[in-house]
Length: 94
Image (cartoon, rainbow, N blue to C red; front, side):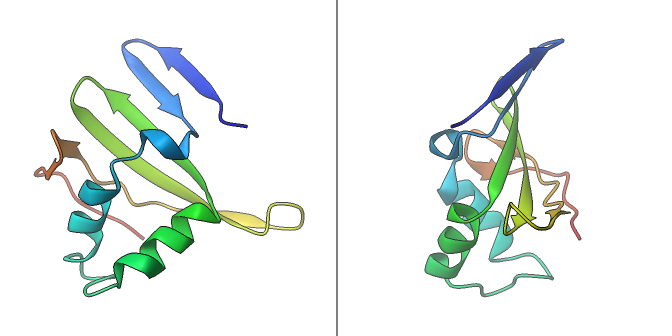
């Protein structure tokens, strides 16, 4: 079940349906840590994670919580920004 939080003009959501997978893939497939990742691999990794989308107007950020949920987890900080579906200037990740 997705959750949403609202504060100071930002919305944080765990709803997979809100993610712009085209923009996420455009960014990840050209990043130094996931260059050339196949789209289906990216989609599976998101489907089996808890995504945290951070939305502020047309700007979007995305962080993926990974793990098996009951036993362990961690954050894959894909701290990237998108503006209307195109990768914007701020990029980073771990």
